[in-house]
Image (cartoon, rainbow over all chains, first blue to last red; front, side, top):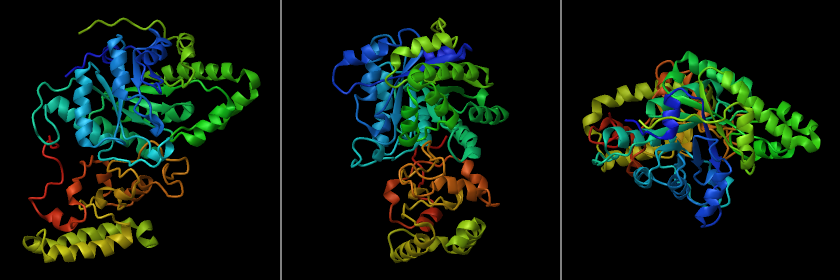
Length: 309
Length: 151
């Protein structure tokens, strides 16, 4: 079943897709969501609404995604297993579809300890793979996990994350295969600063034929300074940044911000050359305004027009 | 316990042997009675020592490199997550080796069940906690995956 989301149509028609993450507001004003999204304008195919990423509280994923949807943007709602059990997760999947959200990224989620409420109870009733398969059962079998019927089932384009940059490296392609089996239609990866590693991973993925079963969007983002890069790799779970990248930022001195953007553009260009990569996912935390510029320099603007099926 | 950790094939053999030995007695293996109480205590002691068993009641050790997935702070039945540190340790408990990094390494040394790590495990039935995994394994009326899960 096709979700008919813009993201799915762009990928289906063979275009190199672009998604980007929007900063969810710490407040109850929906205009804040739209202001943040406006920085991307028409430079992306879909916008990710994060789900309390890093275990920090923000406006909810569904509220952000629905607000953006109403304003005409295609969205990828992230959904994590950290804060909800299987009852809440399945209800959320139906609710998202009801609100016109067509792309859902199924995640396990960061531990609660990394965020601003480390004393919270972590749920983890399902994991990313069982959540993916649950979502697929809802969509394709028209059933809840309990076996009870759903009418109508949610039309969703299902996504998952992949991190080729952390151990066990030789298991990462196998885990990707498991995610595809569970129901993943597209993948958004963790930040790709180590292009060599991405290349190695993608070679394995292509050898296994996985790139023909799933659309892989490589994660990219501009770094502001060497200090920020060092903080990120120390504090954000799963982010790996090579020393050479940090050295480049250090050498740039006061111009590190421009250098960071330059590194990002180079990465985008190199990633487009890698076999099996179907798009990029931009995470430009607190630098959202430079995203269109970076995409333009990377040769990805204007975005293609795709007809509704 | 180091010997087991280095040679998961021993644990694999122990699992297969126990299964064969218990199989003839399966009709007496029932939940809720004296026999289960004995099994629960036995499992707590043996699996507790060897695997730091959390008594989830649905043992999948042979599918997870003879490494208990419930000792993962995220209880991942299908790990590892994307937060593994560069040294292979856990993002939540940095002094601990990632359970799934170990699971993968050990699976490679398990000729009989090693390939099972590539299978997707169903979500855990939380009601089975503190019951006997061996008895649940032999009983046909204990479903270890949700009704709507099978395709």
